[in-house]
Amino acid sequence: MIFKQVFDKKTSTYTYLIASSIGREALIIDPVLDNINEYISLLNELDLRLVKVIDTHIHADHITGASRLKDQTNCTTIMGEQTPANSVDLKVKDEEIIKLDQIEIKALYTPGHTSDSFSFLMNDYLFSGDTLLINGTGRTDFQNGSAKDAYNSIFNKLLKLPEKTLLYPAHDYNGEKVSSIGKEKKFNPRLQVSSENEYAEIMNNLNLPEPKMMDVNVARNIKLGA
Image (cartoon, rainbow, N blue to C red; front, side, top):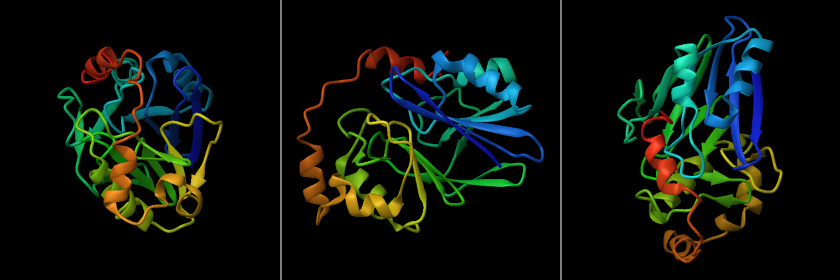
C-alpha cells in the first residue's frame, strides 16, 4: 500500500492519498481545489492512476477539488448518501465497502459536525473528516449539525474501534499529523464528559466565528467545487 498525507497551510486541511502498490490504483480523500497540481504531480511521480475521490462531507472552509480531479482524471466521485451534492457519482451507505484493487475501505455514517458527515475506515486507519479531531471534535453549529448526533457518532461508533486504530482527521491547527483512538479517549478534552447532555452543553456554547467565505464555499462544494 502507498499512503501520503498532504497539508494545506491556508485552511489547515489534510488530504490523503491511498494507493495499491500492485495495480497502481489511487484514491484521494478530501482534496483542496488550490492543491490540484500538487496531487497530479504526486500521482505522476508515483506512477499512479486516480480512480476514486472522496469528500467526507460538504466542507465550509475550503473548496473541494473533487470536480477538477474528475475532469482531469475521469475518476469516480464519492460521498455519503446523505450528501446534498447531486452531481456526485457514487453515494455510499453506512458500512458500505469501497474497493481499491485489494484494499477495502468501510464507509461509516458519523453525523454531527454536519448532517452528511462520513468517516472512512481502512484496516487500522480511520479517516474521520471533521467528526473527531486530534484533541478536539468538529463544531456542530451549522449545516444541520447536531451536538447529540456528534456524541452518538463519536462515543457509540468511533470510540468503539480498537484503541490502536490510527486517527487521521481532515484538519489540524497545531501541527499534529496523527493520533489514535486510545490517545483520544485518554487525552482529548472534549471527550472527558459523562453524558450526551454534558457534551451538548459544551458544543452548544462554543460561540465560534463562522468560517471565512462559508456561504460561497458551501455553495461551490454542493457542486463538488465546480
